Length: 314
Length: 291
Image 1 (cartoon, rainbow over the protein chains, first blue to last red):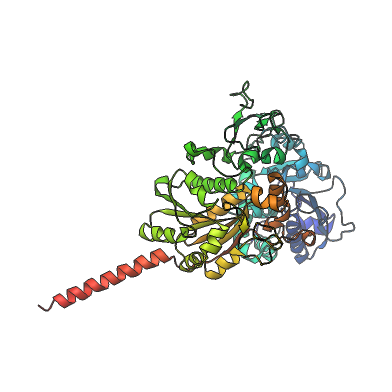
Image 2 (cartoon, rainbow over the protein chains, first blue to last red):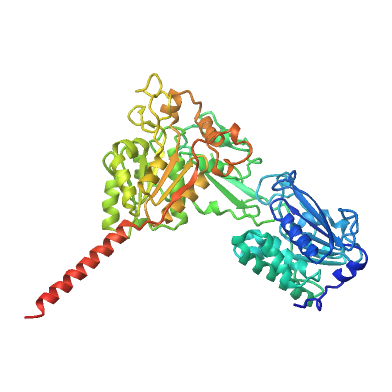
């Protein structure tokens, strides 16, 4: 297998690495996405090629949903296990904002940025729980980021993985994309994938790997890139929430009042449920679901259509 | 970011109930209303044909629920809902047959019907609403009343051990066995959907609250507190193996507890009957030939 004919623009080549500086690959993502698996496969592969490999990672404390990173350095001689700021040859991000968080570690002039456009919004970035409410999440579009990196790819790896039937193989899609930047033979990459993924999922993971590889090839032909999916801007397009309460059915059981996460309901003087604070209501539907008497119906109207009548009906 | 898809908006429970019978007769805060919503939601999401939907129920608070469903409903004698449903499902295999039973209706009065329905594995979805008490008749002890709980017939606390209905159904051979609490309405809906989609007998135990009779007798607090307790004490199975398991035991696992693919009785019966008829016809023509 000869894949050395397609080195990426500015790609670090494994051959010169044997002589001089180590190759630095930084893999970042959210806990549970498979950051460590990608770095393990890469480290295993590099070691099999006789390089000295150092890998260091944070895991465990980050747990599922936290920020996880893994440094992989390989070369003839590697002294430090961590990549200094501005020294990473490739930055692989399994989640969009995590990629942006680690951008300063990328080599300013030759670094390759490979990011999934998947957005995992942490709970504390949600400023309000209304649907469509603004979030404290990065608003940079792939096009904006592209201007700041030597070479950038925004790939909808999670979407590709979903089409393959298993969202969890998105990390291997990115590994496939990464495989284009480092010239190890394709067959050995596939062996590395098969080595580390669960045995039952080897077939789907290998397919994901090939799709990631092909995606990079296609997008290289289409340079300068315009293929990155547009990020939806986090605009404050709130829905109007309206509660339709049937007073004749309400039996004053108080469940909706006590279980409302926003505490925006109350029993009125006749002990009938009513929406006391319409501004707080997020339209989560918990009251509708838990009302044993079917007395509540939540309507989420588009903000433009129902600007004036977003009030509780008595 | 407008990617939030509000799938729940599509379902309005009022389009599935008989509005002229509302408000229903259940006490304030009764969990059965939530269970009925989950059932109707599951049917709506499966786009069930109401003209081919039969809801059969026995006697009791849970038995009353069939009267509120805007479909073909059948309110039958105490404990015998599964017997009627068996006849219905055998005679009309084109129907979706759902039974709604209470815990006493299902396990005490109709206990034998339950185990034999499980054994036959006929395509029926059986919802058992377990509120641990005979609510309608004044709060007597039922087969699922937890140990040491007070009812009108156990003034010193219940001395009998409670039935694990799901273990019973699984042991009797039910094709699909699941359990969920009423607090998690969307999860309960998903479970009922899985049960309705199962080709054989589906037994689903719904842990419901009797606030006015059982809750009051045992000082379990308001209906809101009882619903909250479902959340804190009966945590979803996914949490059972987490690190804090020793501090919060979940005695009753929820979710899909067992499923098997034993042959469905109705289909097997019809196939056998067709084979026998074909055999008899062949015999008759063979006997008629020599003349």
